[in-house]
Image (tube, rainbow, N blue to C red):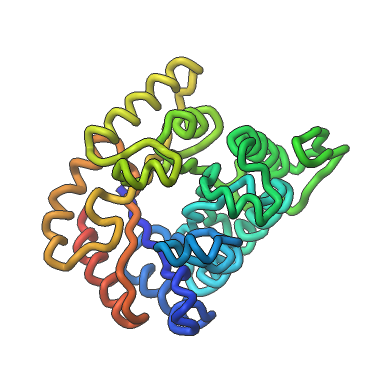
Length: 303
């Protein structure tokens, strides 16, 4: 089992406390010192004010934020959780990802999703209704671009005639691509095109808003994983699929009193097939966040 922690780079209203170069460096080093295997950041380039007021968030650009985390650390992986692929031309995403992978010494994990916020798609000039087809196409373009080969491809919104990109990523096969989402199309995408699956806890009320399937229990997780294995067998996939999950009951942070319960639950997640657990912690201040990271790291250190 491996563990990631999300940097609170979405707390832009707190200014330099969380979204300065110093803050990212201090928090990333705290996570590495606590034994975490990755730091993660989120992605929302153009949310509506209404969505933010209802509980959404702004965020730093994920590739830029993770580059600062990379410069302050030596071994941790750098996880986008998640980049919405249809928001950007896939060649721009491929270049940003390859650049970060090269500069970090091969530490990027590219978590992606198809997205669900129609107004954000509209603001970015992206096609909301075609988001699933565009996501599949973008993954294929990423893989081709990272190989350094000349690409001939007629896309929904671009035409590549012998397009090539260098440098290639530091990782020989390119950064692993983990696919976010609970619904069956996302699971199929992970199995067919990805290296990992990233479901997330979602009660029915949230699942409807996020346009995904509910994920409320370990039984829901088992059902999703069973479908992934069934689809893998159907298409002949034999290589393993990473499974990264925010543990149930911890999506808004892990209270100190629950750390013992968490230690007991980790082997159960591992038995089901989870390979990574991802955490988000409350951040009343930078110092408090770093203390909480140290406490959580101590609780999971023996797992």
